[in-house]
Image (cartoon, rainbow, N blue to C red):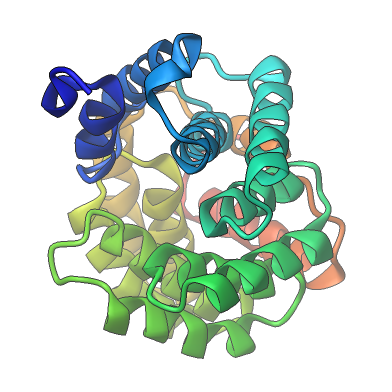
Amino acid sequence: MENWTNHPILRARALHRQLRTPENSLQIRALLQTALENPVDLDARQVAETWSLLAEILMCDYLNSWNHAGKDELDEAEKAAHRALKIVADLGGAHYATGLVYRARGRHEAALAAFTRTVELNPEFALAHAQRGAQLIYTGHPLEAIPHIETALRVSRSDHPARGMFYWYMGRAHFYAGNYRDAIPWLQQSVAARGNLWYNRLYLVGSCALAGDRDAAAAALRAFDAEFPNFTVARVIASEQTNPNDNPVAVAARRQFHEGLRRAGMPQ
């Protein structure tokens, strides 16, 4: 292939290895869509991998409420993951993206099965181990999640751009188990690594408040407000609808989270 080194897929993969932001997510989407418009220079597996990565990036935007992603992007991601699996049925990345779609649809047991399948296909896929752990949290087994998140931390590089997310999952596992003080150091690490996310910052606020450390909760909320102004508890609850969940453990944990935010001083 002529000028393969500048191919949009390689440029997309290079961006994908960087810290995820709304801006580079949008760039990756554009590059992948460009590649898929004229895939004649790609073999079947490369086409499947491109559809798979597009599905993953669309889900990143949807779950984070980035780039005005909504139902159209969720539907597009589901179709892209399906196309990838139709080409290569054992493509780990496509099962991973499917797990994210199932999560957004509220099909949490199916999502857990998809992430488990991803790990079976690619045991070195750190994100899949972490998401398997996250899914155990969502299905009401937060303490069972911890070994899987530990595996993600073990198999990933120390400079892996998703390690901040792994810390967040670990903090949320402790939070969902009601161990608020144990959650705090993990959430602090997550915020230090991924300060561009609202949820790890607010779970730190909630953990400090529920652990009885009002000063730390107030300070964490002030830091949050400086980066994300005009948030309310109602806005948090609305944002959680990208990840619907009626599991009793998850429902109770989210209620405690909202209560922690109120105790810290966030307006309703």
